[in-house]
Length: 64
Image 1 (cartoon, helix red, strand yellow):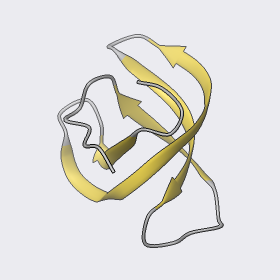
Image 2 (cartoon, rainbow, N blue to C red; image 1 turned 135 degrees about the horizontal axis):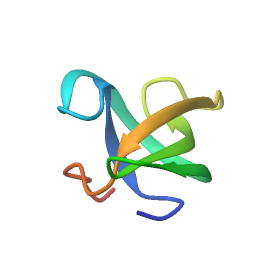
Image 3 (cartoon, rainbow, N blue to C red; image 1 turned 180 degrees about the vertical axis):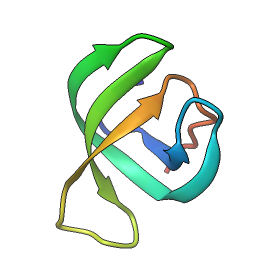
């Protein structure tokens, strides 16, 4: 994953359960075990506001 990618954010990123919404990756904050990364994101339905989210690598990202 890289900045600018669009991914689905999940409430449970390990099991990819409880989808929250699609977000654009802004910047990688840190990497974690279990194939997780902590990102600053901007949700597509809430532009101009950024949030922090745990994202599972290669969680079915889509292109814009």
